Length: 571
Ligand code: ADP
Ligand code: MG
Image (tube, rainbow, N blue to C red; front, side):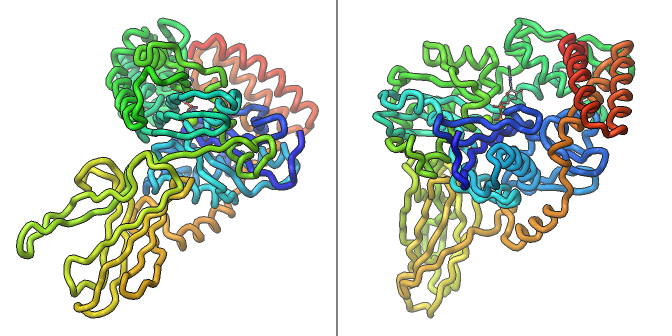
């Protein structure tokens, strides 16, 4: 492999798992983390020594130390919701930045030089606030975002590259942990065009897990919200494992340890499909919308590609097969494909010569506009109408202008509320923020303003206003959305974040094994639990002697034993 001294990395920052990849002369290539794994769980938490752990160790500690650990924070991107780790509260941007930092360190260890720029994938249906939050997360991690790429577009790039001279139309269905995206792409001689995207930023595999956790709780007579944080986390963990088992087998059985007692639980695929049917139904609308927006019929699609861990579910495969009357493809590992595509985009951005003939265009998946008022009589106005500026599925980058005027000649400012959505009424759309446009001059002057919306290739919106009287353009900052951080606050938090101690990368394997052993201890009962207890004591003893060779050997041995235990799987 050859890598130039400045390498752009491609990152899939997932709700559940994150990955990093680079573009090489041999094509896109995944980079393993310090545990030798490509998937880094998107989990963050404080270890016993007060240093921050990222990835598998944090994920396992979610069971044993839920108050010190956070996961699934991507769903809070672009909101004010904070998650508490120990005594400190963090926003999703901050938690995500730890994952990004960890991936960046893995890439640097692999490449042998520092990395400061990345292409990061986001759900196509992520709104402007969520996209800006992702860019802030990267900034917190010391990474400049070269471009945000939509996840299904990234997946399509990875597939398209395999068959770059082909001519086809394909549909990508991406159901991850917390988000759902559908995109339709057309490819001809190396040119890939996204025709339409649709989705739901709050629908994913985790919703199926939650539904199953409720059902398991019902079987053992507890409500997930009534049990301790520890028991709740274990019940959810069990539901997640049983859900995954159902993708392979018609039934899953397990035991849940409650107050020292093993309580049996079971679920058939049929019952699971029944309780998750309302969630499954929500997949249909975005698929139909994408097809109709692309002015196509289901028969026009040559290839159906499924991406994301949750598309492994039987009911999801069945739904897709039924809708398109054919089996979906997944020749590239659905866990890897988005990161590989992000690396292809990184290669395109770096003008890698192997990608000379590849061109990719994308669209904005939703309509952007502003609130207007209509005069309905003398001094009477109807407020709350949505006036579209950029319509959904317009090719990006795009720039559109419109002239707006104040309602009253005495106004000194127009407070323009910017919305995203498809409803004619702003109350049903998402408020992106408010733009304060200053109006100068007296009541007799022309106070019309040319408003320009520019939507860049990352799907990020910028707005400029030019008063027609002065022709002096102002670049305005969209303000007032509680979900986005003001500049000064970003600087403050950046400083605070750099003071947080991160667990040393070279000791991550030990921390991960301890976390895994403790989770197994918590999950098991009886003899098995005692055996796990002995392994913990043994490994902690070895660690305290600080002999690297002894530690490595003990880790390998214990890893094998615990692997066998986990396969028995009586949790
Ligand atoms: P993200 O991109 O959001 O991180 P992933 O694509 O990694 O998400 O998918 C994670 C989701 O897929 C989780 O909800 C997980 O439980 C689910 N999942 C992973 N493997 C399977 C499987 N074999 N069967 C069913 N669901 C699965
Ligand atoms: Mg994903």
